[in-house]
Amino acid sequence: MKHLKLLLIFLPLTFIAKAFRLDEGFIFISVCLSIVPLAVIIGDATEQISLYTGPKIGGLLNATMSNIPELLIGIFAVKAGFYSLVLASLAGSIMGNILLVLGFSIFLGGLRHKFQTFNKTIARSNFSLLAFAAISIIVPFTYKYTARFEKHPSDAITTLSLGIAIILLIIYILGLVFSLITHRSVFVQHQDHEEEEPESPRWGLAHSVFVLAAATILIAIQSETLVSTVGHVIRQFRLSEVFIGIILIPILGNVAENSSAMIMAIKNKVDISVEIAVGSSMQISLFVAPLLIILSFCLGKPMEYVFSPFQVVAMMLSICLSAYVFQDGKTNWLEGVQLVSCYAILGLAFFVM
Image (tube, rainbow, N blue to C red; front, side, top):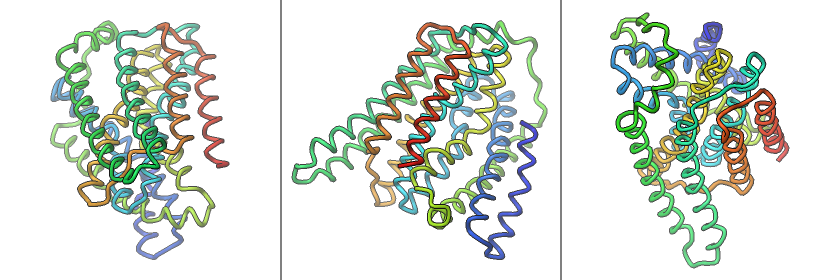
């Protein structure tokens, strides 16, 4: 992933373009490209810090920081009132991780290994949390379209959204306790046999913390710029707000994780690929989404946690197909092609909508 850091050149280019008030379309593209290496740097810094803090705190830090780009973009989008963009980016992250990332991972791994096996207990745990997140998506959607003839449906939906957000955060915290504390042995058992030797930190702790903080601040600045140029980009390139959220933002925010998942699958460590991809979708559903909903309430502009009908269908299809592929504890390259093809079909549908 070192070559991705070459894209850091777009960071100063963004600042120069803003200072000279150049075309906002160019600024948007420059911001998008600059977020990619910053996300990689956050992943590197988090990994280095976890070597000092130990597996429990390191695991918590990884779970928290892995979706920082999406969270920051979402925060500024909520402040700007781009709720369609926020919901689309959440849906796109869920779909992208369990279809595109996981599909490419097992496809590439399957080209080198006829069959790849993984720990079904870990996959089942992640998919069970993802299934719970699916329930939280279906309930407010169904309620909105069945209660639209009631007297004050909007008030009820916003209240329901807040309640669901709180429950999701509680489930997320309990999931971390389950995987990092009470049942941690189950989750690290499969890695113990694969560790050749303990990895030594390449950076000092203070250096790692400084890099993490600096990269996070820069992503916050770039996220605000990205959101501020979205309106112009929609008009200039004739892209929909939903398409930008579904396709572009998830790819930008997850590039470091995406690369790691594919590399692990090629090394025949598909267990880790499943944890990265499915775990990231689970974190988006149970951590990022509820935080953004609660933030919207704090800002006095409540966001309804209600996706469009096609987004709901797309997410349910994604979860069901990926769960079916991983039910038997082994994968092959054809199953990877099926997942990627499903993502391509859904992406095309969102593009032409």
